Image (tube, rainbow, N blue to C red):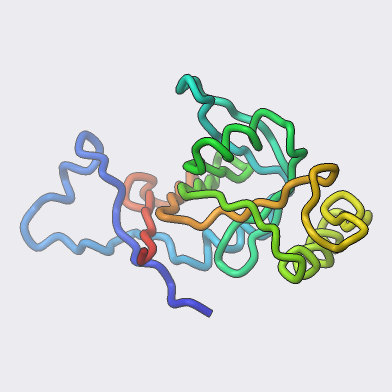
Length: 179
């Protein structure tokens, strides 16, 4: 298991000017990484934001799982989001609860490895029911044009915002990952 990412406050100069005082605790109020992981694991629906080739944004809801320190989801190969990710893998993922929001910024990679696809399926099936294997595997056991694409989003940064925190501004947390 990789080490926890580094936590810091968001760049929010208008709201955090009081934290700039000399001697201020730079970690005061930050959310722990496990807070974000819990929400990434339990969310049922996730928002995926991609960019069209002309730069216009595209936002769509998907089902997915947080596994091996990354977000995994499937989508049809010909969907707008799959075509967008094939052209530009930069994307954002957000959990469904805005009052305890977790936003992942990262790069998506289509997973074609048969073993990785087989490892994904039981975790996904346990969360959502059903049998995803038929959608993501061809009879040969690898990614095929008729199946759904499996994507893994490796985070560069994750943001957590907890509306219920004692101090919302101090609790707004940014986690960064070594690249």
